[in-house]
Image (cartoon, rainbow, N blue to C red; front, side, top):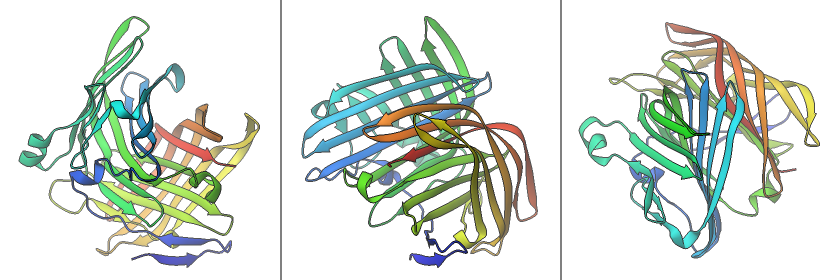
Length: 336
């Protein structure tokens, strides 16, 4: 059920509630009869000042098109590696039943079905090599995944928070890494998305055991989505809570000019006295300041990936966690 809510700025936000997922929700969804864009996104923030983004994106019409793989490696938020590779869509082997992807016969994303059957937890091996840059990482979910589906676009967040271990290789060195990761999967996008949307902000904030995945989408100046899903680490009870947009505040300030775009560098995210379906009180007040900002293009769209430092608090029921200058990753996509 989708509820339309009018805020004080006369912007209509839909209340989109998260739903439970199964492995098929993270599998390939593409409609091979239409121009289709679909992608899988992984990132990790490690304990040794490194972080990564790994992505596979498909663009196709019927069985023609291409896939783009990407490796980004950062140190203290600064770009160390920015590598991409394109392959024909016909070289892409995918499953409609589970998140298993191969390119040219090599597994890129492999979902551990046996581990899922035994434990109920989501475990992935992500292995990707582009030129002399290579990652081999294991992501194991520490909290419950969810999805949000609309008639326009769909979003599965299989790993709102994960433990990540493995190796990264670049510039002739191999580095063992461990840290906190994230994975989502988007589908239902097409070439017309550029013309029917303004863009979006997205990010997540990790506390010790509480995580907020948030987004502000701008469909038109009068209509959009304001989302915040709060997860808690737990094996024994419900682990995520959908927040009504009437209880969410997101603001951006301190704009700079970058690549002819006006880009904000500081952000505030608040959840204000939200009562969940389980009558749990949720509050948050998070300030985020940009450490480094990376720009790239997706066709004509401007894409900005941020490394930010976050301060503030997240409260769920009687539990409150403080953030103290903790590194997070977020993004800003502008179609205009």
